Amino acid sequence: MPDFARFLPLSNRPKADEDAVTSDRRRPLAAVVAEAARLLDAAESTDAASFVRAAGLSDLGAIDDSVNLYAAAATIATGRKRSTKALARAVRALLLLARELGAEPRIDPMTLGIVALYGATSASLERRAVIQGHALKATDADWEFGRGPVLEGTALEIAGFLLAVTDVAPQPAPRRPDDAAD
Image (cartoon, rainbow, N blue to C red; front, side):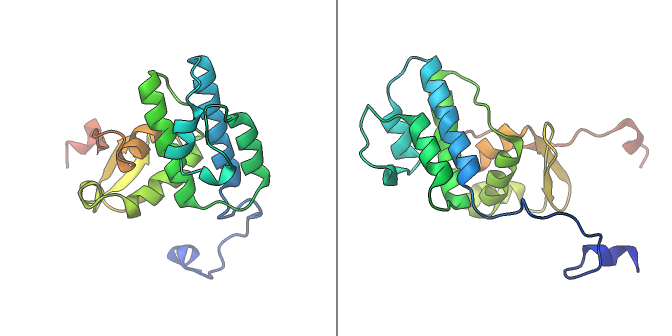
């Protein structure tokens, strides 16, 4: 079989266990909500209601200052299926919360990759124009997508840019010394 055939749909590429592949984002969303709870606890803040509203999680019930985000995370993890759009909205709310609190959020790199891929197709026209014709590569995670010259940054930086949390765009990959000879 030619080498390129393994990349074609329905090809005879090597079989792998794909049981973990799903479009259900309950688990990563629950982890994002739990991280928001951790950040608010560390800052001794009781403003969980603002995070819940910003994250679009009003379906969790009454939203007031007594919202328990740890309980909300458990409810999400065992509740109905959640979309990538819902995950992206919650990650954006978490990044804004972390910036407000002056904290560094801990988000799974694969979650950031999912959100970055979603953002690459749904971000504002200006942000999509910045990344058009480029591959995006996380320098601190095992993901890369797109075609063309590589723009890179940390997974958090790329997701933050595509979610309009920051205006710092991914940068061209540094040239290697052996590239200068070309």
